Image: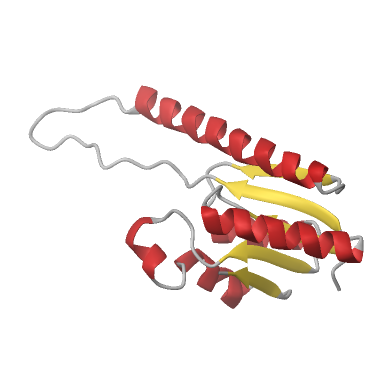
Length: 149
């Protein structure tokens, strides 16, 4: 155990706490580290209605580009923290993936033995309870999950 960690972060305060905890765990155990962030699928409720149709294509492209830029900023900061801690870490952005799906899928594909993540993310009202994504990862993961509060 603690040979291959998947650390999920969204750049939030709790995501950064999870990153710090995961990096310390990796340092103590000499574990391999993958830092993951995911961008939700972009969807729109724009439709025909009584006002005609709207071409949402350019808007969706701009949103996806913005999400990718934000993910790269989050991952660059995380990689910098890992490097400062003397840890070599791979970074990974999965666009158009719900966070729970991305985390469980990546942990399986990379044969990670532990997932580290924050208890809540940046997901509106749901952040007031145990985050829906954290709860889903706990329910679906086949490896231990360290939830940081």
